[in-house]
Length: 76
Image (spheres, rainbow, N blue to C red):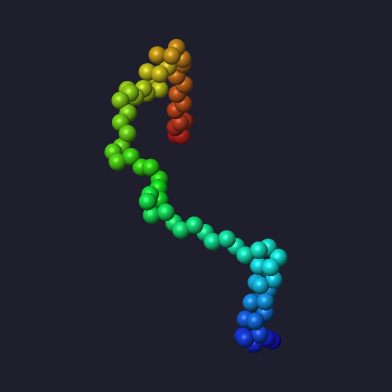
């Protein structure tokens, strides 16, 4: 098994070959300090829903529909 020094030398040579073949990676631009990173947009107060809530019976009457009810069978 290779020693640490041999592995380090081999790794350095391998990365040098990659840099020669693909070119050296360009420097990344520094992180902009002007604008903070945006997290998710969360409302500070909960959204209000001013619409009236319809139950199934009222919805059936308002929209000319029918209401189907199923009751469980009682075992005796």
